[in-house]
Length: 270
Image 1 (tube, rainbow, N blue to C red):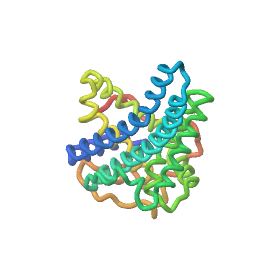
Image 2: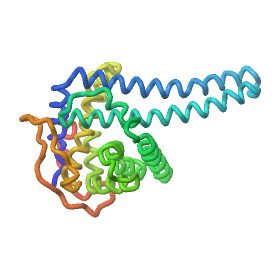
Image 3: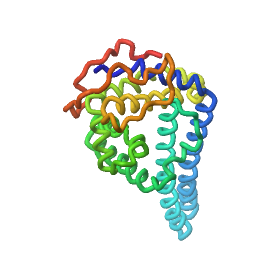
Image 4: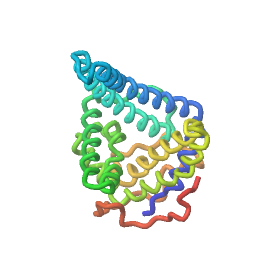
């Protein structure tokens, strides 16, 4: 089955249009919170550097500040992980037609998911990093193989972290190239956003891309998961094709970029 990139993007635009200001506002809030956490995490590093420089690169104050810097930086990275998952889940619920809810940004902290989300996403980061050490291409391929993890950790509480990895691998088998092309199709929008100094990015490109990526999960969930694990979407309209172009798809044995064809002639479509 061909990957329905156009339909996914059309669905994303429909979902964004139906909830424009709530989606833009909540995603912007999520980005601000994630950025703020990262910035605050690195403040002790800057303080440590300045302190060390003023004291000949060594002092008890510099040593203490360096220790605090390491702890705060690690905490910042850990909190960033939760907002990454929260943004992904928020986008997925909006794509499915649910009412935008700022509480979804904090879904990783709720209902005993803390350890599960933390452990799963730390392993994603670690595995991607280790594969990237071999060469950049294996790292990119693995990043797409693990792309479903932020959604699965929330959507499938019945699965262990190990099983979520296996499910993400199963869902993306034969589709990693399609996921890459989906992201690549936004390059034109990214260039336009750069010309507007990021303003277009905030008000259109990032919400659109985030919803489209959630749409990719929605499609793969409906075509690669067991039927009993798939819920019907709330949102229905002429522009939202919940069933896409088929009922199910047999598993591909390919564990590389892809072994299927896709129409890339309009890679820079809307």
